[in-house]
Length: 275
Length: 286
Image (tube, rainbow over all chains, first blue to last red; front, side):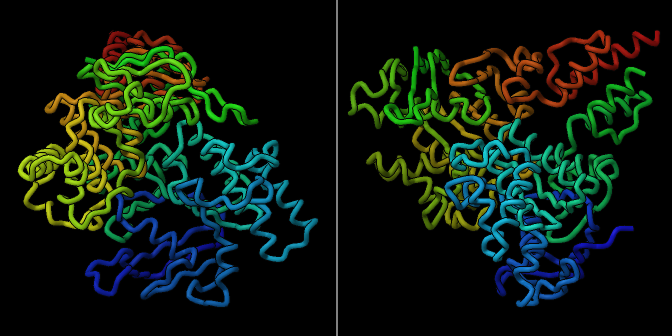
């Protein structure tokens, strides 16, 4: 069993003391090293708040969060925590700081006082990992949305982060940009990175190892994509949807075909039908 | 009555090192009552194109005609054109600024120097058109609303100008699936009830497939394909080549046909796919 890189213990948080409802209301969740977890849930369910709590941008009102054993409420560990678990946000234009791609990626390690030759090595490696090495001397504003998000991911890789938290990284991207980002995440998973992906796209969630469904500040479902999406009625209750392919499989299953109701992949269904 | 774009060329940064032809020989006619979808990858020219429709940008060559008026020919008519063609940008909730929902929606019509009664009537109508209970919502601060509700208020603000054409740029970006379905259902009702022509720019092939009656595919500044969703989505290879995709259902149908399934190629909804597959499977078993 892999070690838990993130431990969330009974965490509660609200933005304003006067609020009657907690944005995060008693969450318990462990994330294992190397695991790819998708977090889904309607707007306002607490997903993004949870991500900010993990990253120590917000602090729990009660309960504890540990990132690689470090308490996120421990001020002296702030930068170590942000290095261990880096964040990528929704809008690609709001997180790139430099005028040249490779300078943007070097920004993080430079601030940490990393040795210049080591920075060079890390920048090259990070750019290659996201498939953007050929664009290293481009100005970021000349890149597409998907490319900008890959640069943002490379910036986190250059910090040697073990865990990457992405808050709706594809919301503003076109289909090919979304695919670029998802393919990059699969590659990072193969390299042993821990990935937490917050998304509203169910076809992205099915690509993860594990899906966590949040609603009203707490974790309502937690399982493999197949376990989560097999029950359409429950999923809809949480303001979510099941992928079209799963809807079709369930329709065929109910009509009496010998098709399991938890299909999440086009190829899987096509293969079964062509047996 | 229609919007006609003829031989449109649009060039950014002319005379600089970054000169880009954003639109090249675009000819499109949008008819009254249409529900038109525009798809294309980032940089294909979609956003530039919609900004030409109400005169926010001027084409380098060619002309846009809105209900018989050539856009930009007479500057005095520009405000009339902007009223006729309402544009809802991405993340329109960021443009809400008034203390109450009613005041925010009233902002546009108030600038038209209409009578107070007329303004109030428009505010009520357009909020109700967007699915709100007017009495309940009018005094609420826009900032206390959910993301989906804010968007609907923002669209109501544009509808209060009584446009004949409503252009929506990625109206559901960042909304959860329920919010997305709700907003699209509302836009659909708006189209049916008010008869407003809708031009929808979206990256979601599923949403385009179930909503619009005509699709324009933009690629490298040109209109690359044009047709009904069924026609467009029966070419998945072609769409993939230009950075787009097809709804998952169209992908299944395409793959099954490649493997010898005798089903129709132009299926874009789950229900149709289910019926066609069942028919074929039963025929095979018989």
